[in-house]
Image 1 (cartoon, helix red, strand yellow):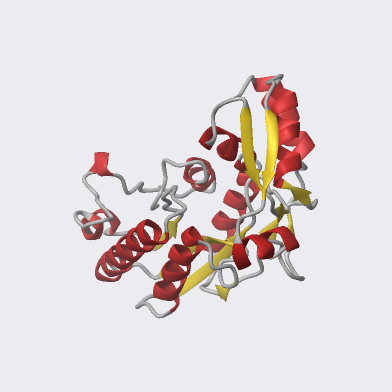
Image 2 (spheres, rainbow, N blue to C red):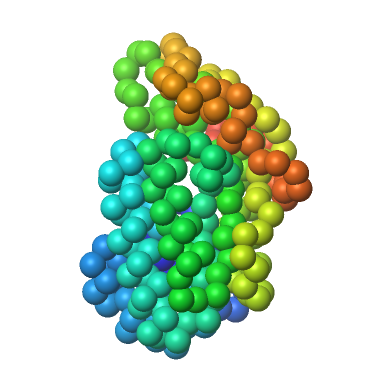
Length: 247
């Protein structure tokens, strides 16, 4: 399990355990460094499959490309040497079409997977419900500048469940994407989240300049049919936020 301690990975690991698997989390604490390849092969010894949800938070093309190129190459090489038979990787709806810096890094990851040495499955998902909170956290202060973009926000737990089903099956290449049940503007999501938190901040919509911004605002991050629809709405997610006191 690569990326087993992040938002998605922390849901995939218990879901795998509940399905009867014995997940092995690749982490620096366990002596594994995907950036250098140290410890990958021995950690994966005896594993039949790998779920790759490793991530880096950056808008920079250079940083994203360097990160995903290194981690993917080392993961695939170590997995091949360890005898792994199937790699399941998460990506994002819109990655092949939108030239945003982070997406260009994910595009490198996808390309390495497709042309790599192991049978593979690739699942693209839309933004998680938590995306609005991540955007707000990146712009502290009374004014929250939020990009203009349309999405079908999806529950991370539903994506995790789909990954578990895929890793138990045969390699399938690019599968149908998964997305949430409703189309929302991220600015709308941010305002609703702030209201749920009872925070007084002004949301200022910002269109990202150029073709990338036009594409995001026009719906390039929405999946084409057919795709798998998640069931949890953003409103239901907000109810869970309010009930749990999560920020």
